[in-house]
Image (cartoon, rainbow, N blue to C red; front, side, top):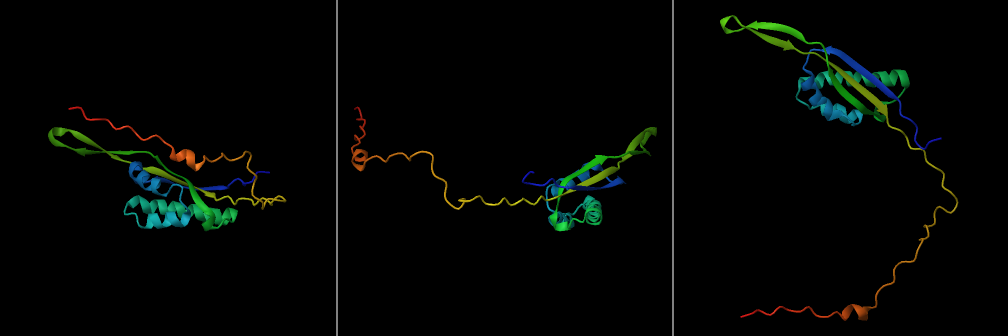
Length: 161
């Protein structure tokens, strides 16, 4: 059996969010790898519209973890947070001289995957583990103090006139 148990993952997804994926990715990268309480604090103080949407998805993922697997919020961290592009609604706007400008209304799919922080399994101490390990070789012998003092003085360069 391994010393660390494999973490369980839970995910939540919001599809067809009416927001540019590029703008939402800026917020998603701030919370990747953080614990859930820390990510909530970051999202609460982020002044972007995408922070509200990502916070809703995060809340949904936490609720899934608590209801389906019984994992408390404090043991979860954000393993993955990514934003994929969704379908683009194409509109047009009249411009000068009978021309048309295309307007792209982008959508995105926000996904948050939470994982449980693994608890390390404490190994039982072997007998004699309290003792310090013995060194495998002897330390190097120190030089005598007299040999260190007998260095030749450095030669000075004479200035040529």
